Length: 98
Ligand SMILES: [Zn+2]
Image (cartoon, rainbow, N blue to C red; front, side, top):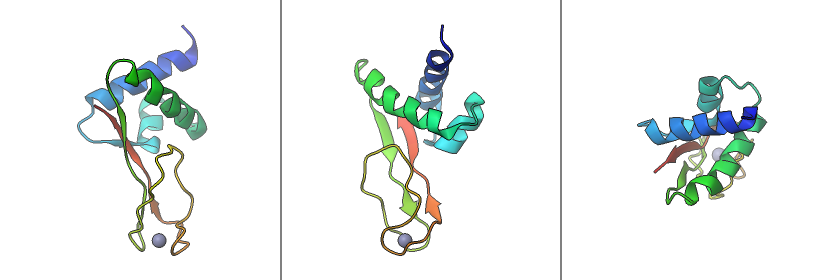
């Protein structure tokens, strides 16, 4: 079994069993993968995989900690700065599978 396949299966398990939605950083730490970009790719792939099983990858959108702006975008990639106040103090998106 390839390395990424094992990791994606672990992430699916984590997001299915976790009570609270998880951030990309939390997922990375739990599966022991330092490269956040790999986790982002995994999540984009997992969104399609779980749909086949009748489940959904749900995302709590990112939010600006300074002005409260909620990022509307449904993309997995976390934004780096707020379009309204330009703050980089961003509450990252959180993920769960239901
Ligand atoms: Zn802001």
